Image (cartoon, rainbow, N blue to C red; front, side):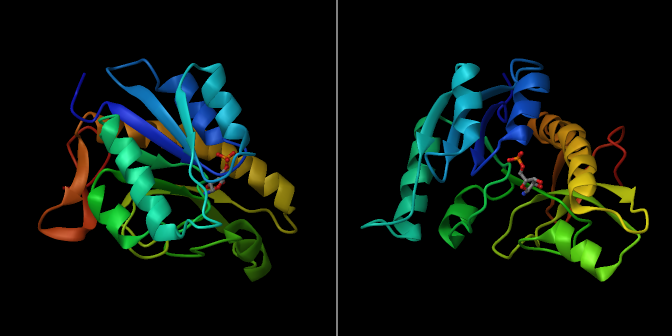
Length: 212
Ligand code: GRF
């Protein structure tokens, strides 16, 4: 197994992107999903992980636990499992700067817009309210800002006039379910990484459709 082949996925809800990774990445090309963490115990992604025989954990903020403590416990749980790549797949909470630094260059997020347009929550709704004619999906490395890290892959979709949120969500999800597995495979095999000379950009090795 390659150094980046032990993958953890972080979820907060439905987990359809986790399912795409379980179906198309897990157990292939030396990549294993070894852990799934949820920010709440009701996340449906937990059931998907259990059905696939993947270890799960719940890491909530609340009561005596603040975000810094939660993120410290989560990072330690991931490190104990020798996780080499962490994928935020519908993880709906900010992560502390320390967590982001610990997994620098090994932390990915999927976002339902063409970043840098519409970062943060409600990206699909805001794109529609704005009347944009094209939106899409971005997979990026996570930095300390909100959806501001170096971009790995993007794919656009055209928006018809009067598009409905539910239809666009369906289309965006279908694109995410292709693009996220593609990005995880590329990062795991080491053919995509943050450019050491320009940390706002990503270098793709030849053959990955990127730029050098
Ligand atoms: C996706 O649209 C992703 O872009 C966003 O949250 C949604 C998660 O969906 N960050 P799911 O939980 O993977 O079904």
